[in-house]
Length: 356
Image 1 (tube, rainbow, N blue to C red):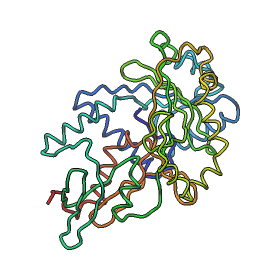
Image 2: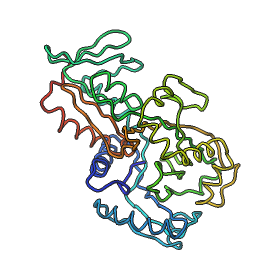
Image 3: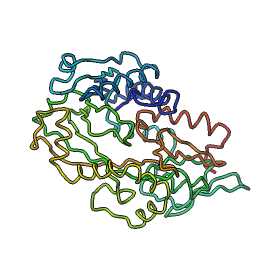
Image 4: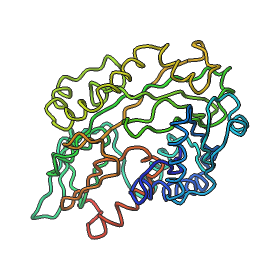
């Protein structure tokens, strides 16, 4: 999804780079012939308390400079999403969807056409800055490469690689698995575009929602379950060293004490297809168990600080010739081009970019 920037703290990097990135991404997709569907998003309040939160969300959207974001009652909600249930909605007309797989391939083509090289499956063992030579040495599993400067954007391994290069111990990455169901093809008409819940500030993640993709498929989810491996895309993937690493980190222990109840609730939804369905039916009562098709999962690389707080904003550190993107949660894909500009403008201007 290409986010409009409804949720983010005004003035934060997430707020400013989301909107700038969305504009850049739309233009980029236009020049590359990548389908970009500005379908809009409906945020749905299920009761009066959520309706009040929705009004506050609209005020934040306006403060962030969004235009056209409006509150809609049940009659207009039914026009936007005929099968949805709720007492009040917030419609964001500028929210869009795009195939980020196509976007990533286009980025890769740009790199190659500009003379760059992409190496897949090459594990970086360590990074170290050579103070005398002013270069960075990257030790890979098949040899060493020397660079003038390096940007670490390693997602689930961002903290490990940054710390190995001499960066701060904090924040650390805690992996959460998000599990999705795909709506079967014959029932895709239940969702026209994007249906989202009202965010709850006391909870760490958004909750189950509905997304129609550019190919017409519809996904339901995700939940947010603590993964027991850095790349634990499947439930049975367990990495003892990763678990021990989490338990040793005071930030994780403090986070667990704060969010243990919501964590158990997410595990319950993961274990029970029926419970997952009931949560989705709060928004679309017509959903049936047989409507839930294939299941898939992704991993969110969530940065957590030593106080147990989930780091909300984008975080970029610099140590000499090494720049580390330490936290880039959603809407990082939307903001990707703007994040790149931010890194180049603020961290790379005085550094050599050609490999030595």
